[in-house]
Length: 176
Image (cartoon, rainbow, N blue to C red; front, side, top):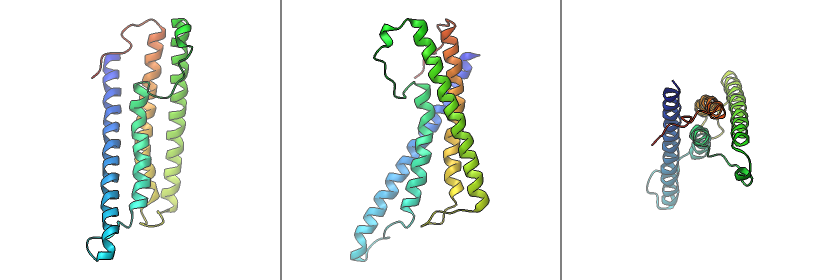
């Protein structure tokens, strides 16, 4: 059962990371096209700058950041200070891992909850971006997808830490 949950969490985390990477690539391409278009304006050649580039960059970057959080959590990639970790007994290190994973689960759930409320608020009032008039709730929805997957993966990480604390040696199945 645990191995199946790990595969699901890993697939979700990787899938979100790929989506975040794709969002960043789209932003880079659009930015390059906009810069080239802006450079060609004096020559009266080309498409000109992309009118919504700032709005699209803002939405895409927010979505990409949330998309990378699940994989970072699963791989224990968040910043940590391990200066004294070798000096602590194994049980204390495992207990600290559980504490930090539970803290990240709390943060992930609160973040997803607040993004949901923000998205509903933006949807209700019909707020749009300044330049391109893109509905702001869409940016919240794109970020919310990553936040929900982050919360699910963080929940799995708490389970992983509990199993490790309980002495299970198979708490981290091999992954690619």
